[in-house]
Length: 316
Image (cartoon, rainbow, N blue to C red; front, side, top):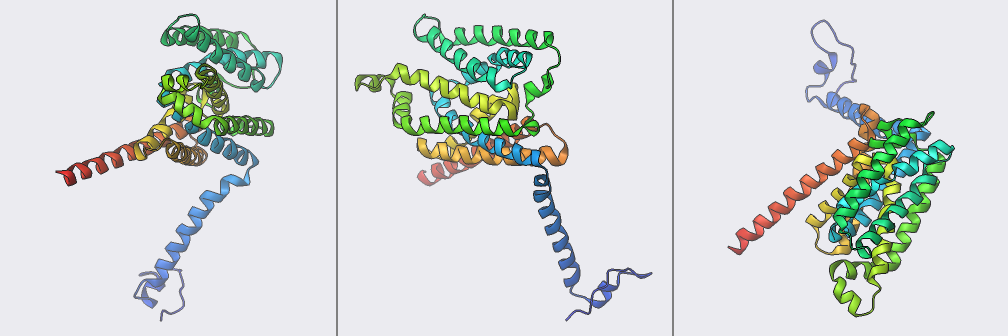
């Protein structure tokens, strides 16, 4: 048995080295130190109410983006998501200028732009890439001009572009929860039809599924998810949370519904880890979440490559 430990050092060496030759005391001391340090690192952020609100919104963003992102990847609508994120800036600027919450301007702007792109593509004969490019550039430029002309806006351009989830208010949390609930309800109700239309639009149309209406609904879902994600990751990086976790999940599983669930888990973890990094290392929250999501994608790609290589060797 070790003698009672005393951590006070003598002139030659610490006394616990003399009293405990198996280093048990030192091991217990270091293990306790690291356990306390890790626990403190996890618990400390949530002593602040703004971090609790930021965590709630970040987790919602991490879950919702891959759920809708799975459809986006299947339909090849990634550029559409990026364009919508930039095109809602005029609505945000107008809301700020009128003294309202940015959600008052962003939500109708996102839905209107999404439906306009759908109309130009489906009815006006304009190609999807062309309509997206025109509205993306034009509305983004208009939004920047409006933000420059407006005075007294409570957020900086950097926060708009890169996100600032740490500034989330209680009202923002409630709005985000409401929007997320609506999106999940629509996805739950129309999941089978959306999947069928995504993989075989011709077959879906033949059996009587209203494919054009579902296309518009998917655009609205995409618009709402972008609205949810803007405060967390900003205009520039919203595409990363929309695409990256969903793409990582599709490397790991083949079933579409499973890919949505795995993507939601990856997205939530990316948001939580990114938020912790943002708090402890004074990093911008949006880029931190995007980098963590990229890390998960790299791990998923490496794992998928290793599995496929092992299967090829086994087959050979």
